Image (cartoon, rainbow, N blue to C red; front, side, top):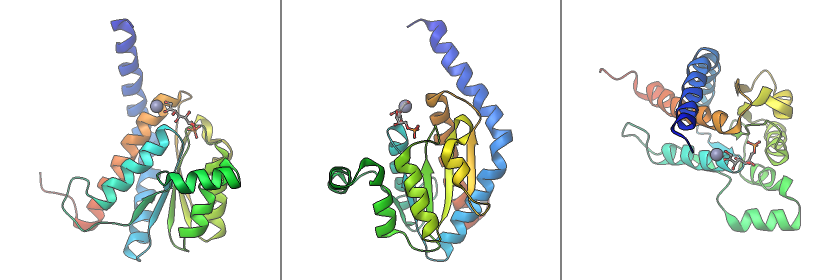
Length: 197
Ligand SMILES: O=C(CO)[C@@H](O)[C@H](O)[C@H](O)[C@H](O)COP(=O)(O)O
Ligand SMILES: [Zn+2]
């Protein structure tokens, strides 16, 4: 791999982040508001996604249950990507499409939030989780890319769609992680106010 190729990855990622800041600041603010309201009402956040997005779900849940940058009480967030017994039993006995939806049906309650991650917006198990969440009167915060796919089309006006304006999975994931950190920071600011620098 040439030095030039590495420089190009950094360049593309940096440019996309700047472009996304302008386009996504508003939906990210809306997502913070939705999440903070849910948490304040005693509700929780469930998160699902595949591959790199599964890792993002766990990253997000760790920052809510543990902490982001400020010391605070643990906040209820659960990654639906971690219990291998549930994932294999549901995948084996029903279908891979159901691995997240069954957990939304088991754990989700009205007023909870589903954080749904899919760079293509087309993963059928994430779409099924979105459907299950909407059926239960939960709100959805969807992190997508590539135009938003079928998940983008399924969302309602009460949900929040954060769609990264790019077609490359890796680049979209990089903006998703930054978005997750903005969500954590926004929740901390909603709790404590902006820190004096
Ligand atoms: O991390 C990567 C690619 O960068 C992969 O593991 C990627 O997450 C997987 O191919 C996923 O299955 C893609 O699903 P999605 O983002 O389209 O929903
Ligand atoms: Zn990746």
